[in-house]
Image (cartoon, rainbow, N blue to C red; front, side, top):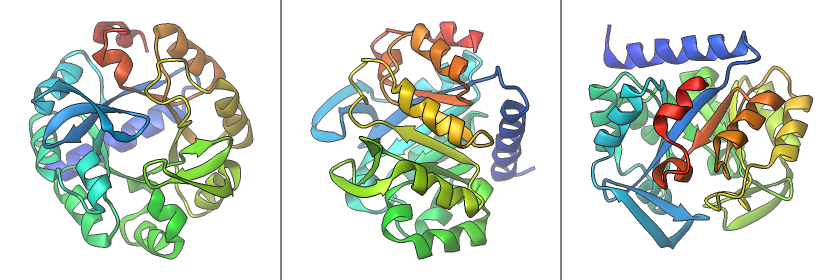
Length: 261
């Protein structure tokens, strides 16, 4: 079996498992990449960079060794440039771990989608393109399959934001989600941009609203997680997954503690 097929099959198994068990929640650690290094930005601001590790592969292996199954990999250089840049980091992690990787950042054209899948990602993570060019994104869904995309619904005051959170729209997050569920998208993550990177706790009320409106959706919470208590609350309200970044890197949450999920 090829590396691509292996990662894809594992991704489908995870999706089916979590959908069939309302008490299960996948912990999805995040690695953000600039210049091939593991970093974090404060609320998407490229002038506020924290360097956490020079070797993302080493971090990914720690996640795998701890028993975690998925990885949220973000190409911040690609997001800024408007084209995938750090695909070699993806290729290294996909080739040397069995993690199910969703990869985003700079996916603006079909060739970028092909690079991401050819480099070993199980899922392509997209956001702005789905807002700004619906026709193109729907074409990708038909070409590659809707199951192969993780859609980001970044929001502020329940309105979708794009372009690294710098641009607010008038699109209600619920209308946005419904539109792409109708197009076959099965996994969506939502980041409340006012919470991300602040370690102030996730947007529980927003997520409860989304889950109640779309009970069949594989919904992933993102942003604000600062403690195990936050994760327990997300599981209680019915999240299928939770993306965790800064809380791990700043030792608010120990990797081994995540195994209870």
